[in-house]
Image 1 (cartoon, rainbow, N blue to C red):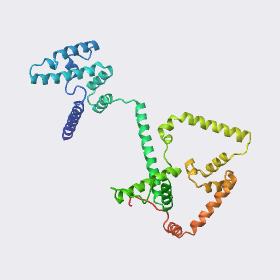
Image 2 (tube, helix red, strand yellow; image 1 turned 45 degrees about the vertical axis):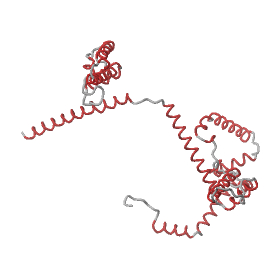
Image 3 (cartoon, rainbow, N blue to C red; image 1 turned 90 degrees about the vertical axis):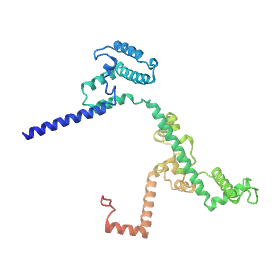
Image 4 (cartoon, rainbow, N blue to C red; image 1 turned 30 degrees about the horizontal axis):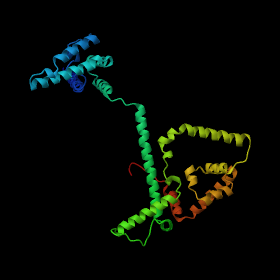
Length: 335
């Protein structure tokens, strides 16, 4: 007999737990501890018009402005809010169906909780979200590019060669006079002005390319998306022209096309290729690296030179001996 009693107690406790859990969640949604139909004095079979009439009558009866004392006003405001809340739930067909489902299935509190708050989440236009996201990315993109450019200028100002050239150019243009003394300015102020002049001259006269190039508003995401149709048209036109001239008509490559093929073989972006020294690009041109066979020979030669150089490097030798004795490095959970 002990086992049936224990089973009975367990089932009773489970039922009580579910009831408590359901009440906890449902108490904070819809009409809380009150029945929305009872609040308006209607039934589940009442029509929309009947619900509206009941709401207007109750709202008029319990309007806070009709209260005489302060206590009555507080009670009327609470009742008025309860009536308005019940009406908002029952006047909408979808919301009413969800409420009826809650009354029929009170144990499915998680589902009711989700449905209730899903309808009350502010719905934001997807286009606005996308637009704001693109704007934020564009601002960050420009800020990072500008910071990298300023950092490159600052690093160049620390190199004696560029620093002296900038000072000479600044003195020629009358931007800086080392012999000029200004009253009321300390040495630190004069030094700060000198640094600003150097940075300004370097910024105006140096053509930094590659990843540290001066940022252009055209390169940010927002502008790129705006001009995307033009970019696609330009690429299609370029590809059609290339195919016609060099695949069909078998014309000779011009300098622009040769440099493009060299960059393509090197797998460089336009920025990386532009960042190369002029003599490097000219060397590639003289070696005719736009021709695939010559490029493959040049690449194999460079790889062999690098292999020999690395083999003669002491640090590389130590690394190879380490790999031979210990194998490649591994990371485990014990580490």
